[in-house]
Length: 370
Image 1 (spheres, rainbow, N blue to C red):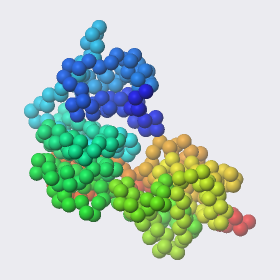
Image 2 (cartoon, helix red, strand yellow):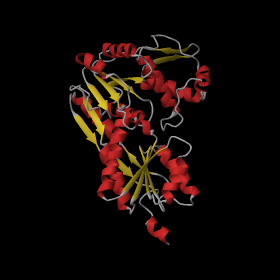
Image 3 (cartoon, rainbow, N blue to C red):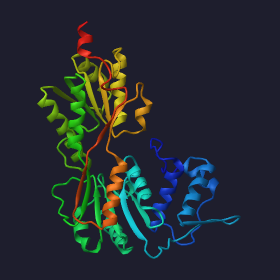
Image 4 (spheres, helix red, strand yellow):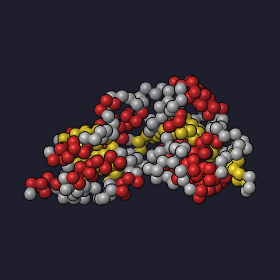
């Protein structure tokens, strides 16, 4: 079965399938008039229904990327750009939050004026450097108006520096390498330091004094400057700075083995009353540990997630979380694209979306004294 659909993604299945085919058509993996498999064959290959395939194909037909001929099949069309239209190429993860950012970006710019070519970084990341350079050259050869790259891409930057004169506009989203010497590039960044600081202050304002960070990052990777680790480090630094200013303690637990919940129970029993989970999914370990101690999130221990995904509503009580504001990122990126900006940096502060898991209960320490 082809791994095209991310079941954890909030993006509808038909939209994910449409994006998958759209990426490959625009990247030249399908040629003009190439016949695609039938609805039934695609539904079996992708593990979904014919109705979902039909919805995806209707979107692709609206995009001008396929032609559906009754009795003959589905055929690929090479997109023809109209006068005054622009091609935007993106290299990004087809998962949250980047799928939402680029979805909102398409809505901001409008499909009538801008055509998007997507390269899924999960596949791009597996290529050798020479192959990556070929992909970059292929992108440049299509003469895009802009090239957008997300913050989790493992891409050798010297390739972009080498070909930067041939790229009209280069924008990085959530990219923090201080050694990145591409002065022509613009950046749309999330202020993760402020995000971490705001979470700690929210917990402290609710009377929490003994704080804990739960993250999936193994301790062995703590000092490795990979793209994702750089902004996680900023988030943790912001959280610690606010906690230390208020004379609060901070523990860090890495949710990477079967002992996580036991470790959490021990720390909660020793006084931890506020938890930041870097990734909403990891709140599951915190909720389980609290449940085993007959404690309740929001009443006994405040729990806050990060990224504000659909997981927030799967918890009881619903999880307070931090949004990095995908719609605002998309809007600011669209402004840069339409203005033809180069070398600019925009910083966006995350927002806490308050639900029942944090900041709503009475002081836990007083309850424990009783």
